Length: 415
Image (cartoon, rainbow, N blue to C red; front, top):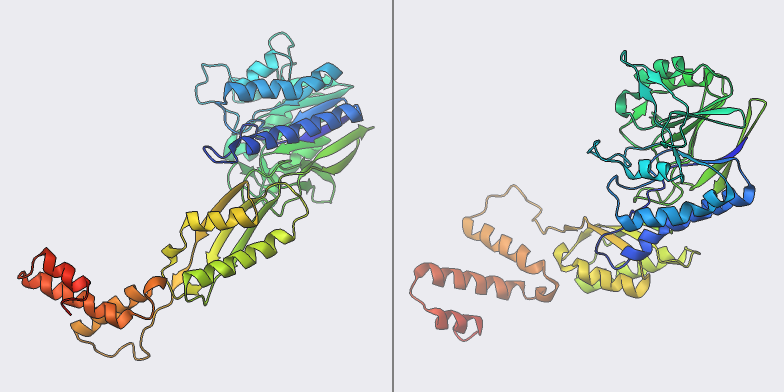
């Protein structure tokens, strides 16, 4: 048997109400379409999806229609798409048919979902083409069993899963992560809990974590494979290899080759603006560093950017507003989507003798000096503006001036 093993496609993912919403939405379908095309070209016996075909359980009708369009070449070529449900595919109202079930009933996928016994065990009934349901399907003598996401207690289910399997030449589709391998924090089992699967299944097709990895038995034999997501789904995945496995099984011997996909470029960087005394100086440094960052990219598609602004500066960090930064980015990198995290801090001008006692008046002047000097527009005029601020404060507290007199103070006429 030859098959493609992919997972975590996340169809329907996008950035809502953002300028790049439509283009980002298309990325995930483009990625799946390429895998489908490869499956047809390679004339594989099946395409296996290890869960999270969709980004959410309650997808838009247009997402369902586009999924059918994308999977149609598989159906036309007679290549079955065998899938399980991931944690993103589930719908909360189990009295309603899910989109995965609908795809299965329409013949675009074979959704594997086991039955449960009264004692809590598993029962993998053969897949029924008419109902589009079942827990087990036979392709070329290889018995494929499917088990979707069952949460953090997955490790305690391994023995029951293996006990329910009575055939030889077995493969398991399982949406679960393995601790120390998987980058996600929930829905994992420990490696020693997973190892017994190797005694029943010659290939365990994993999903859930978006980083590819291979799990080996204590003696070093690989048995479980996680391809990760073929497209970059979230920031933090910029360093992961992206792709799927092209697998052949012959006489119990497994050969799994990782095939690279072409996800949209994603860049995450810290932009150090430390030492900048004015907002304009910081903007020049920001532009220079972003230009250096994007210059390293060879992909001409608009990138996804996550930028963290760091360093101590001599102006208030709020002066670098998001709109100002985004406008600069549009000129430099034309990103499809950008997220900016402002972690700048303001340089304090505390005196060396921080423990010296100060009068209330001196403390007031120091605080005002810091506040006024934090603005690029007012630097160099701190003494003048601090004096004016205190003058206004005193006049208001006395209560013997009206509005016109206060305006006269601001105009310098009452100084």
